[in-house]
Length: 329
Image 1 (cartoon, rainbow, N blue to C red):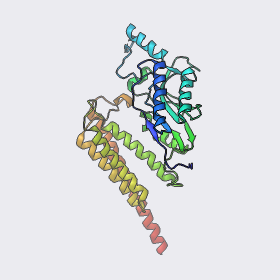
Image 2: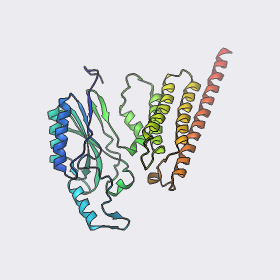
Image 3: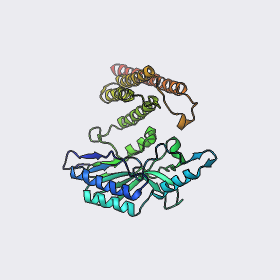
Image 4: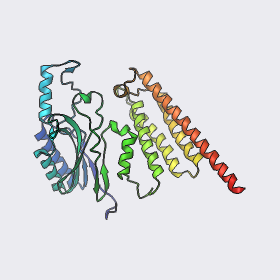
C-alpha cells in the first residue's frame, strides 16, 4: 500500500501496569500513548496482558485438585479487573488513540462477555486514529501455567488491519512457532517487503519456515536460569538462519539455494550443540523431563532436516542437469 510518507514512527512502550487495577492502568496507558504521540509516533504498541497485568510468578493458590482461599481472592481481583470488549475501558482506549491521532495496539486480559461470561483470554486490541476498535486477537496457545488462568483462542481472531502504512497484525509469543499461522497471516498480506518480492510466493514460504526455525532455536537455547550469554547465542543462531534465507533469495541455481539453507541450519545447530542449553518443550509437547532429552531431540530434528534439504537440493540439481543435457541434444 502506497503512502506519501516513506517511513512511520513506531513507539514500543516498556512500562509497568498498575497491578490488578484496570481503571488506573487504562489511565496510565492513555497518558503514555499521549507522550508517544507527542514524539511523533503513529503506531503505539503496549506489552502483552498490560491491562490489568501479566501475573508472572503467581499460582492463584492452585494445585491439582484444590485451590487455597487466598488464591481464590487473588483470582477474583484479577478477574474483576479484566477487560470486557466492548466496555468503558475500551472506549477510553479508543479515545486515547483518537487524541493521539495514531494506531494503538494494547495487550489486555479480556473477559468473554458474549458466550461464557467468565473465561479470560490474553488478547491484543487494535484501535484506529479515529478511535474505533478495528479488531482483536486472542492468544491461541497460552504457555504452560498460563493455561490455568487463560482460555485458548479458536483462531477466528487472526486479525489483519489495513492502514495507510501497510497491513498490521500480530501473534502472541508461542503461536509464533506455528508455520501454518504465519502462512495464514502471509496470505492476508503481512509482508513488509511485498513490493520488493512481488510474485515470489516460494520465498514467502521460506520466510515462514525461517521464522519457525528462529523461534525453535530460541527454545533450544533457553535456560531456566537465564544464562547471561543467552542473548548472544540467540543472536548468533538468528544470524545463521538469516544467512541461509539471504542466500536462498539471491542464489541463481537450485543447488546453491539449498546449500545456503543447509549452511544456515547446520551453523545454528552447531551453536546449540556447543552451548548445550535447554530446549524447554516439556511444558508444551509432553516431552520427557530433562534438558538432555529435549535438546537431543531438537538437535536430531535439525540435523535430519538439513540432510533432507541436502537430498532435495541434489535431486533438483540432477534434474536441472538432465534438462540441460536434453536441450543440448
